[in-house]
Image (cartoon, rainbow, N blue to C red; front, top):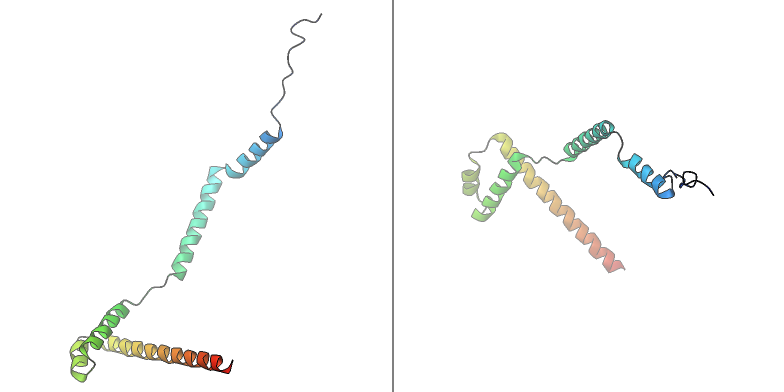
Length: 125
């Protein structure tokens, strides 16, 4: 008969498939925090720079000019109303207002052309 010391259970290291998967995931997601923080800061800076580059900054005068345009249309566009509403504007603001009107007229003309082309396309089919 064997002594009890000789019959003890064998110690098995925990290297099963689940332990290997666990170690792999731990290595992937819990890397050195210094490396991750520097990578995260760099990617955050790149993201902020990208957002700044694509951000549309509207001309501050444009809102004022659109309000002035709305006021002109409400009061009726005649020489007296135009003079009263635009007398406090600088020359650059007056030029911007003129460009705004020209831009809107061009946009309306393009829309009309597009509608005409659509109507002709439907008519021809």
